[in-house]
Length: 467
Image (tube, rainbow, N blue to C red):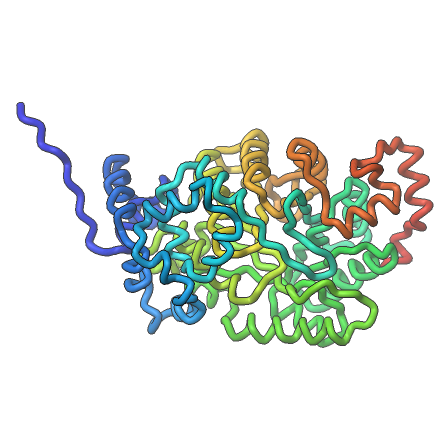
């Protein structure tokens, strides 16, 4: 019997991109995934032969119909693109992985890379490739301190509380500080999106940071309009937070526009200039969170695969010069990332694409309780991203968020990863840790229960003082 080779055709770039993607339950749910591993490989081979210029000239979503597409093309550095314009996706991958290509070369072309190019090259890279290429890049940002330098691993303290109890939030935050966490941000996801509760959280966190002269940022992760309303009522804001997506429709479902983000950023920069009590290191004032599957979950994916849409969300974030960007990689659920394999792949993809596009990438290495994953899954991705030079991770009490009801990384994990990779906290924050007695000689001090009580007494700790 004569063997007839299987042949595949792809009607446009949108289909080619989707079929070349690694297996994702979200793409399958959307009906755009490859039907077999052979079709996936065929799509990858065709994508590898595509020139970068073809990708730029054929937008996957028409700029006339989508403000994210329009923003991407308006912020595109065409002059910097010229040296790589004729390269194929495969050749671009070879350039990224070449031993002769260092951070300086990659920095020069960051704004010549549109998100769709970042997504295309990601699809033909292995997990090891994504770690190796991302590790070459450090994107440094500044607000109250400096994040992202080589050798630095930041941690966000996430002291969420199911009733927004200020005492509970502050006690969790203080515990995180005793583990050397909190240099990235002390950020609370509020249980209520009310202006009063948001303002109360912001004031309490600011009082904590001010009382102990902690060189870090605070944030309440309410909707941007709620945060700005709290600002109008006198609440202090270090970082302005918002979840963003890769299409205009996704952002509309979040209740935002690009104009809102721009106006909000301008207001916070002006607010910082008026605050005389803080010595600011820079004007990176935005904090964005993203996640593969968000566009599909809001029925605004426009037939585009979730990796490409995630890259486009980074195109939005890049336009506003953020201090932190965080891929909440396993939070949306198994409908979009089914199991450990898909979650790990997505985390590595997101981190690499964000770094390549010039963003200060962190990751909430997490999963929901109905996903095919466990704490070993978290450890695996945590260590891979540590090797890749991730800017920061989450610090959640015991790795179990009691308000959002999902599993993430703990304060103990932060110490472990820093030790394994010989990493340290942000420089200003490390000096504070040393002066406070929490660290000694660049390492966490060994504090027994008596020493912890003495330290807390020495810091004059009181919830009532900070409320």
